[in-house]
Image 1 (spheres, rainbow, N blue to C red):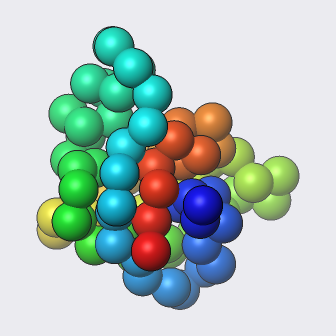
Image 2 (image 1 turned 180 degrees about the vertical axis):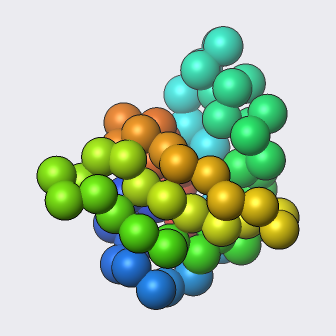
Length: 73
């Protein structure tokens, strides 16, 4: 399984599934990360946390723990 955390800077990936349950999954989906969305990885902080991504026409910073819950292809 490949997650959003594994995507290199400058690459694009498509969301296959959002893992997790309850409020955490809902929060990730409320940010616009849903099945089928293309995500472009802009930057990764020096220690890997957070990850800056572009999706749906806006920029978003995501914690590494949250990025591990997003399965991509």
